[in-house]
Figure (cartoon, helix red, strand yellow):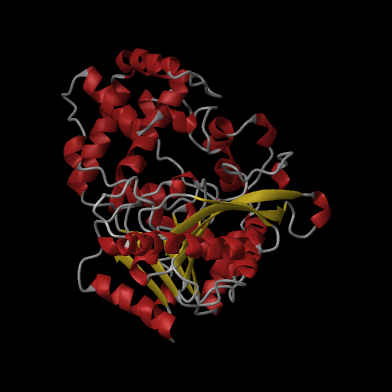
Length: 439
């Protein structure tokens, strides 16, 4: 930015030098803008602020709605580019949801910082500003989303010719894993963070993890005691719960009493997923207000509401990504619901999706790929994160692999990153990635 004024005592050469220092980044920006604008099917290139990247842009790339039938139509997918240098590696962030948070000027991808790399951040189809019109849900498939990434890879490789690394977190981590499965040669390295690989709609591994494995018996009991107490006090707490939902204009596909049950059942998963300190959970002796406040803070009812912005994810979960179930046995005498089985259809999807069934093809394809191949992949998991229960860490055949690495931080949650690990494991991970880049 050009200074707002100059002191009267500055000499003319000082002015010229200062001017040149501030003009130079504009020239650099013009160069990258011109290169981005020259890419086929890339449009609306706009610079945005960044605290960490000298040049950062938003843009759109035109994609096929159906990768195998271009006649179905096109849509524009939002992409964010953080430019470090044309001679640097490029991180392809395979986001699983919205791109909004990457617009923040304080956004910096972890791998980009560690490896001094460019970032190409891709918003997932059917989220945010990347929704085909008309919105035909038949084309919201993992396979189509992989072709989205492949097209972006082929397009941006024209200006970023160094090695590429794919990475993503949670559903984005799944996307990283699936991308390597569908297009194994597109990137040199894949780093999926906290990525589950579910084998069914209600996978079955999460419930025993929460009841028998996570953390220790004392902490598990503390969480269960809270859930039991809010179930026992349901008649007292339900008016507060109703009022909260009414104030926020939340509506649901099931009666409010049943929604309350699901919010309580969800509580344990949410607590462990985000690594909530046990000291934050009230004891059974706490007041009604303290209990209901804590329940809602950690298990937000909006998650199950008709206003939820995650409908595209719910559709994919039921169709091919899979999800988790709930163990209702400990609370059975207090529940309004008879069973939690198939709750996603009943609670989280409109009636138009009632016949949508889970297809195990994606799970089988991915597992087969990992079993038969040994690509350079660095999996990152948190040990208390329930999503890790359906991750790849327990796949024994991976232990014989030379390149596929799985790192689990024992007390780590869904927020686990490479920088979360203590030494020397943290350096081991980083040095391995750098060695792969330099090969």
